[in-house]
Length: 186
Image 1 (spheres, rainbow, N blue to C red):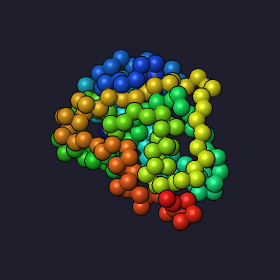
Image 2: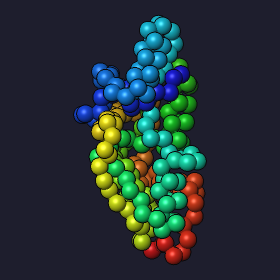
Image 3: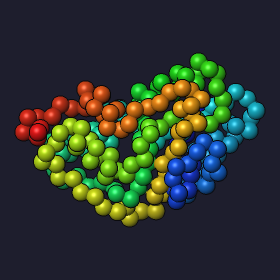
């Protein structure tokens, strides 16, 4: 099993399917693709799992957003970088199904929502009921790929596993992030 990344794609179109041609534009994406290709060329039992923006672990994006907003700091998020975030619980469920089936090939272990960092942060604000959030969007001024969203339809159908939407996942797993003080709640 090799855990790869959405960064193996160019990032200009988004909605990349498992079999889509890879054209990474970053050194990180190039290294991931080199490993993917070398493993797949071995003609061995190899599985590549592409995930993106993993959350549900310490130091993740929701933690960063919540920590900042709980301090009543301004939070700036890119509104022009699109990914399909992966909840750690979904990643574990997908990996378990892959192992149980001894499946090989390439799988996209992501949620169903393609969102910018700003939309992700806005969803966090909505789910946690933060009324006084100082949330702002802005453009990414670096040479990062703009739309790395992955299409997971083939993976979901094959594994018969369909991750929840982003808001539902955050809502169902609120206990993973710090409690919200009464002053910030609705």
